[in-house]
Image (cartoon, rainbow, N blue to C red; front, top):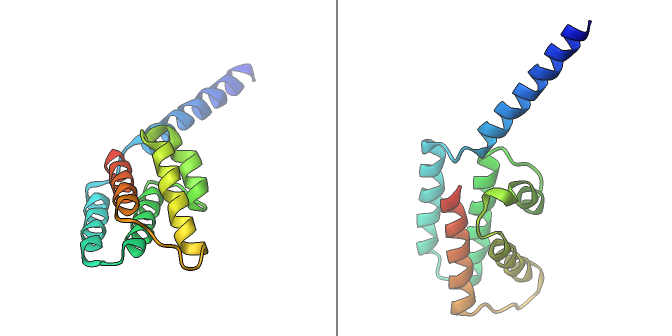
Length: 126
């Protein structure tokens, strides 16, 4: 009986290890192409605020492609260790929330460019 329990525990540890390894892999080649195609479409958007909203959405989709679920906040918490510029991503996401939830929010060129750069770097790190 002890041997059986030991084997079950070892199997669970092995499954957990495999799951964690798979989760640490980056985007598949096909998913990376999809994300980069979406990213290139940002150049067609003239409105700075809208570009930030779209960049946040693309990043959210990329996290979803990696198997993270829930809101983008949930995904960021779960994926945090693999995102090297995590604090900057949170700041860019906060800007997105301000744009989405504060009527009349104006976004400067520098704030928009900074947020886009942060999201792009985070996507590249996936």
